[in-house]
Image 1 (cartoon, rainbow, N blue to C red):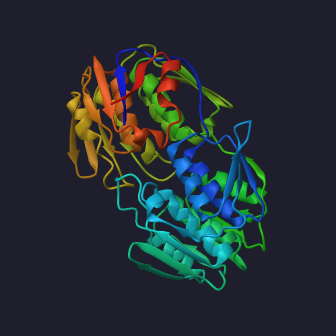
Image 2: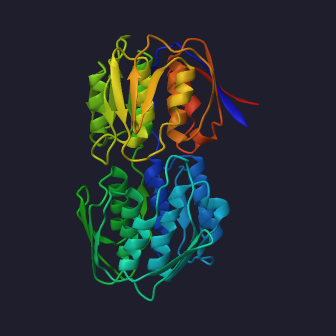
Image 3: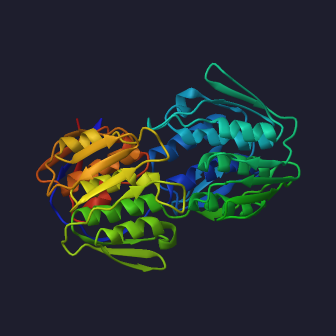
Length: 419
């Protein structure tokens, strides 16, 4: 087991490069199931969730090679095991994305109900209902989803709620379905668009990206291709907030600023000076204490739930009072008790946290509970007076590539130690 040890109080400065997006990489890896030849994927991040995805696909019969240029060559064209077992699925909710591709290509699948961070119930009914409307027969028993289909038929899918993974699962299934599928109330996240671009290069016929209505004309086959994963906007946002919370000045490269408009807008509200170029964002806090900002999470293009915890850390030491309302997941405030142990003045009221900014936080021994909560504790530790230790950092490794090394490049006093 490892923990992070942080000596806080150092304003961050310098330049870093954003890694490829975790939330794009996983569904694109699973899209390889649809192809009858290999994919070569560039800009893939080295994360534990990526490793878990590769182990899951290998268990199903895929092969992969890590190329010298860092890209991954993955061949899932001939699966021999059409099941996703609990032993791998339990750690990662994105594993549900094997369902649509397997049904579309092989007409059957057995998948364990997924796990992941303990931040909400994450019902899979949206996925199952959509696939049933396309002609699949589905049973859920003993913790597994059993699905079969003589043929998937294009149809009209109307999601009651916006769901990224349900949109992606249905989208992938529809690429090989017979006829046209229309997905209404589809998720518009950049990662969904990234999947669409990759599927299109594989031969899929999809229109409507970046809108709430997707139209897919099924084709007979998809082929492998070469594709580069989009940058991780959540990782970029985390480092920008880190600079803001420490009063620093950093430039984040390899990022698409247009994908981060809501986060950039909130950072400007804190008092940060921000300059954007085509592929970079520079934030300069000019040693000022940030101003408190109100946050309400919602589906893209609104404020992302994956940045809520990081902004709570910032609001904890900001000037003024604020509220943070979580509308996506019902249990995504597990970082509140840990931040409170550092001296944050936070009060939980239903799905809202009332933050009263304090002038400083104090280092403490902390326990990470989920991926983004872990990131908020790191940010708080970077800003706090004294020493902070964070245990269970394996949560961080699910979504941040070499996080302590990147923070060291920005001048942070942070190290990973075994205990």
